[in-house]
Image (cartoon, rainbow, N blue to C red; front, side):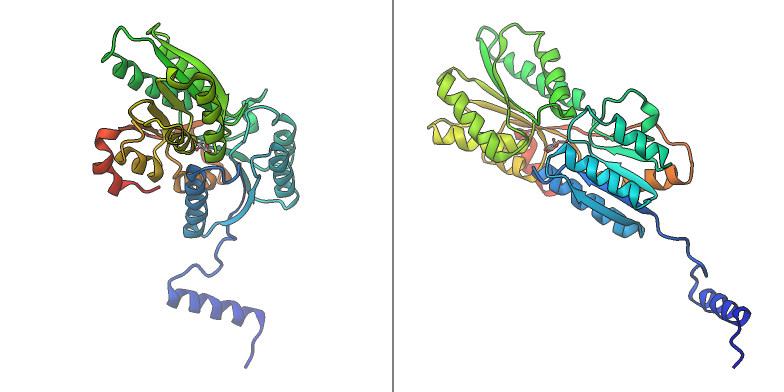
Length: 320
Ligand code: AHR
């Protein structure tokens, strides 16, 4: 059989035609993704969403877990640049300190997409787009819920303790800002303690124990920047002999299944949704950016608020 180059190509084309697939399929897109870590139920859902969407889209995903450390993210981004990936996406653990590494990516002509959290850089052209929630608005939503609730006891002073997220991270800064901005409308609402719980259950519990030791029964409300810290704190409140959701009103952010379970059990009063299922949108944006198609500079995730009263009804619909 004469098997020269032309006959091999013709055979490949015929076979492809018979199978109804492109004869010379394009090289799969390669994305380097640097994840913050695995600090919360939210983060786990976010990682699963990104991995599943890449798989479904036939995109090669090089995934690196930074274990909540900026230096690990910088290393991962540099390694993606060295590997000449088509695009880099990352969820920055903190807001500042990204200029140098993002300039390196730009010099290497590798586009960057921010997911979930924003960066504070001198030149916004250092990234193509930012996909994620409006954290200031999430803080405002938490604050508005409390303002409404406070109308039930108009004369009472309301002492709030706050569990902040990771120091210097966009969600911690913005959720604080949005909440403070809204509760300023009612001088009876006062944040008496505010400390980081690093977005984890263990730290949330530990810091709440310290708040309870210092302030005891003076605490009326806990505002936690995520559900995991609220769930840790709920344990601390119970261990202190108090009833979370009743003796202390508990407000948190994310809307993970664990929060719905706590609401159904009457231990959490409200969760403000922060949607981690960013995978499909990220893959589409990545394709568009690599193909040089115009993309919006900011893509905001749609979210709502779930008070305890709707928890049982909503629970079966929750995807994370
Ligand atoms: O950046 C999103 C935040 O990070 C989520 O609210 C929190 O749970 C996570 O760790």
